[in-house]
Image (tube, rainbow, N blue to C red; front, top):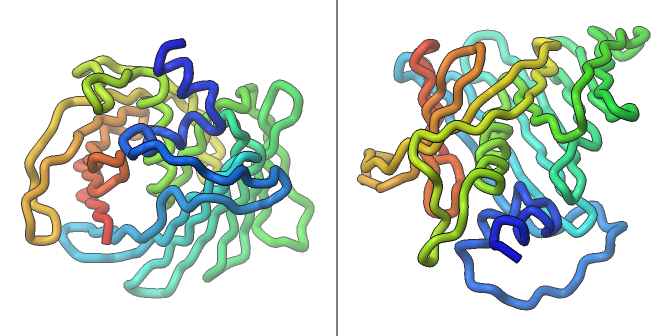
Length: 252
């Protein structure tokens, strides 16, 4: 069995790329009914526009035998306060089980995405007291959620790219240079689906937090433009650059 096939057959293949670079160790099996598991990643991103910090995203990714849960909260720092939260539940194969988005301030809008047979159903409302509006999308459960404001979703997509397009070389994960892989995505905020492509574009030495670091650089392209992402050796996002919006995202 090849490394790639083994990875894809392991519980939540999209989240196990980080374990590839760590020494193997025995772990006590978790009960499938337990909602939480190993903390795969957690922390916060600072969102900067034109060099000024305007918002913060706080996130966590927990992985267990029964699947994974990605939680995130986005808060603005300037002007009228605005806050949103999201919870993405995925199966052990990395498929969508349920996605929930809630506006905390200034409004109370909310939306959910669920799997209905062979398509996805989004239900959204501007007020929890109102009847939700339903929008079906002819997309499979393997579709990637790429919602506005939640940059951690891009890390999940990069992990999916690593699991499907890369292989394990001499003690490290190796990806083909400039070879793009296509993914179907859904943006619940925009109530729209789109194709996105990811490519590994090399390694860069960049200044992060006053120190120079050598990081893995990836390109993410969609109808919304091109994003550049830099990830560390554990394939966790350290920096995102969105040139078209003069926006930079940096891990705290």
